[in-house]
View 1 (cartoon, rainbow, N blue to C red):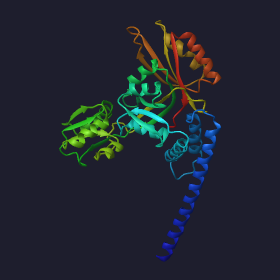
View 2 (cartoon, helix red, strand yellow; view 1 turned 90 degrees about the vertical axis):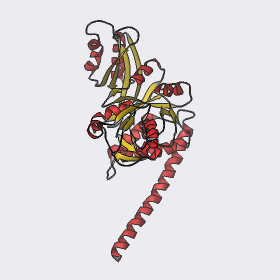
View 3 (cartoon, rainbow, N blue to C red; view 1 turned 60 degrees about the horizontal axis):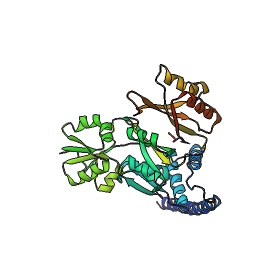
View 4 (cartoon, helix red, strand yellow; view 1 turned 45 degrees about the vertical axis):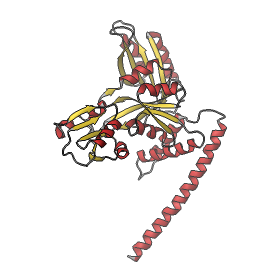
Length: 358
């Protein structure tokens, strides 16, 4: 027993020494980050391409035993704290507090930001356009329920650019005042959350009324005041409203993921692993969309997304949202975009940005 205690004391002493070294290195990094900030001479503090390069490098060289996701979360918090020494970035998101959108903000920017909850996606766009905030984080698609139409509609007319993306695994929790399913008469949730959990709710709470609310946080607020109600949402919302998790991960698809866009006044410089988003309109003639996309295929550029939306300029006219690999400054993609522009009735490049890591 004495030898074991001695070994434990020695291990703890090593941890203390490592912690001291970590603190020293963190302070050194923060000081150099301040020097970099002064050397920028007024250039923007947040550089999504640079932060993406750091994350990619550390994930690729990570020896373990910490997971790549854990390493990314730690380094993003360090970068967030260092960035805040120069400037506190303001980021709008679809509120209220406790939503998955707030989680996406912290995943991308860390916690050393001024995260501002907005009432709707329109207000998020307007906050950046008017300069009230620096960036906005808005949902654009869910792997189970598809595109967020309002985001697509707004980005066509907005001058904002996509400068980043966030892939957030969505794990829905069923929450209420007590950690039990007994006596649940109503289940609140955002329409998207309810849709993502339809099968689970049918199996486990077939008699409970499903009530759509403006956000899961609003559902949590109601469930906190109603003993026979529950709500869907995140663990953060449960903590915020003092609720117990009655059932965890009730989403129907285990891989359920929401993709968020980071919007700013400018897009990002090349990071080495990028995407470019664009929206095009086609002439109303046979084979128009095939002809439009042909340059991408001929150049060997992968297209990861093709989404259509009504153009609102006339009945049965559509816009096509495209996400492809590479940066718009890449000569190969630049040539393709020029060719698409010559064939399209309308073309708008929405931005180039670092691709989120899977």
